[in-house]
Length: 73
Image (cartoon, rainbow, N blue to C red; front, side, top):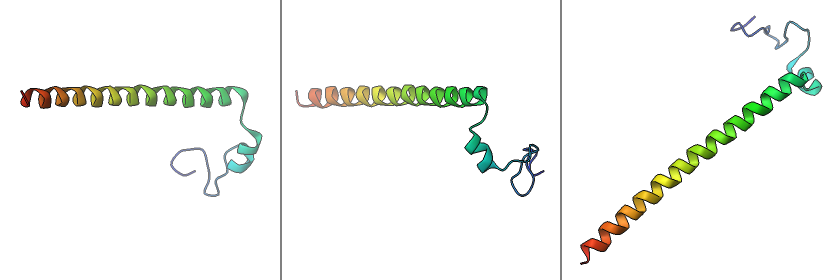
């Protein structure tokens, strides 16, 4: 096994199937559910991060706009 991941040097797991065979089979329903949940969690996290970034940019633009307006007075 390489790196303790349960695979030999040819990419076969202890079940005797290659990664391609496992992919074709699609994994067990609980495994598919966990992967789906992980993707959804990642997507939600990215949306929250993006929203925070946009909000901080908006605040900075407003701040700079206010400063430039005050400098013309």
